[in-house]
Image (cartoon, rainbow, N blue to C red):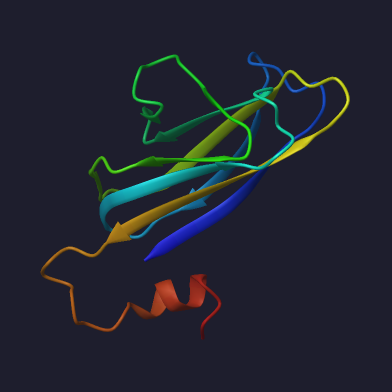
Length: 130
């Protein structure tokens, strides 16, 4: 299942007080992720991705990603199990003229024991499919 969200990083958001958003994941294994920096970011928008208090992206703790008209892919595998299963996305902006919206996508594969089974009703409700 692919989960996607946008992070709007306003002018004036700093490393000390970054913009944040959260994305709820299902149980499984993260199999790939991406961060899309649209054209115009000019390397001035910075992002980190966290899961359960652990920095996932970039891989070096304390570091931040930046880009311009670029998609950064990560194929590392991370287990997703215990609640709350929230990915936290942080961003700050060094651009003094423009806000920036960064897109983040995370693909989670179901545990082998669940493959082929219909999704749980609470997940379908959470996704607005019921």
